[in-house]
Image (tube, rainbow, N blue to C red):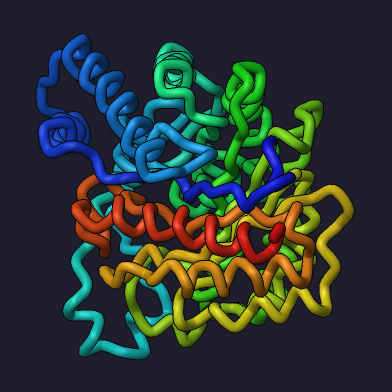
Amino acid sequence: MKRSTDRILTTHTGSLPRPADLLEMIRANVAGDTVDPAAFAARVKSAVRETVEKQVEAGIDVVSDGEMGKPSFATYINDRLAGLGGVNPAPRPHKDLFAYPGWATTVPPAVMVRRFCQGEVAYQNQEALQADIENLNGAIASTGAAEGFMPCASLGIIADVVVNQHYPSERAYLYALADAMKVEYRAVADAGLVIQIDAPDAAMGRHLQFRDEPLEVFRRETAQRVEALNHALAGIPEEQIRYHICWGNYEGPHSFDVPLADVVDLLLAVNAGAYSVEAANPRHAHEWRVWEDVKLPEGKVLIPGVIDSTTNFIEHPEVVADRIEQFARIVGKENVVAGTDCGFGTSAGRSAVHPELVWPKLAALTEGAKLASQRLWG
């Protein structure tokens, strides 16, 4: 994992807008319509190359494949895990939707096909995983990008999205998922890429899955998920792992979000080399102060979001620089990599930010990092 040794490096959170023609193919796949597998694979490969090129042009140092071939950051596992079946029609409402019913009528429904766990889970379809890895490594080689990372679903978000109907307990389910998903995690690491564990459940879960439970219950369940995740990551060097939490990538009230201070110890309990945390949106921009009281462990990297992924405002580079410098003063400039709050294409075709504006926002990120670097290094 590259570090900010002589300037502030830049990255983002993984998902990016899919091209319109690829988006049509993804939607057809999800709907069960016939899509030529060879044509789909070829378009995903070319789209990965295109999106990596755009990231490099925008000045991003640590790039991803944009999750080009995936229907969402989590439900891609429908095709990767054996033991899943059926379709879960139950909604997944978060607490904001109950508290603000007028606003709730303006929120479009999530496009997400959710399965049930109905049998023993095991990793399958490794061909698709290898294709993702080869597509990203090939694009990195052809563009000269500094480093690549690949987002992978956390055990907790899988357990949230794919309701267990098979295992006798949540713990048994989590460890079965750990043994299955370690195949993906290790394959990504073995290919020389950085793994990003996407874990919105570790923050958003407080006002979603555990919205009616006391904080202690949420913390206990999250700690169990962290324990199982560390089991899945065992043997992978920490410097090849980054861990991302968020409070839900939507523009909304967020008035029930759990404070970072209430979960930061669980965040740091994950055996990762870097931690990616929202820090730009109006609900969490003040939480840089948490790091004044909580010491970032020696050798770790903090990836604060300095660009909001839910607004069409293009941040001014000076604002970005100020945000970066706040963190650099507390945790050390060499321990900061500038990032975004969340992805820009968390679910295919559903984004709060217009695709046209994603790239100037990323360019503002890199310009802000340059300004901050000039001030921090002189």
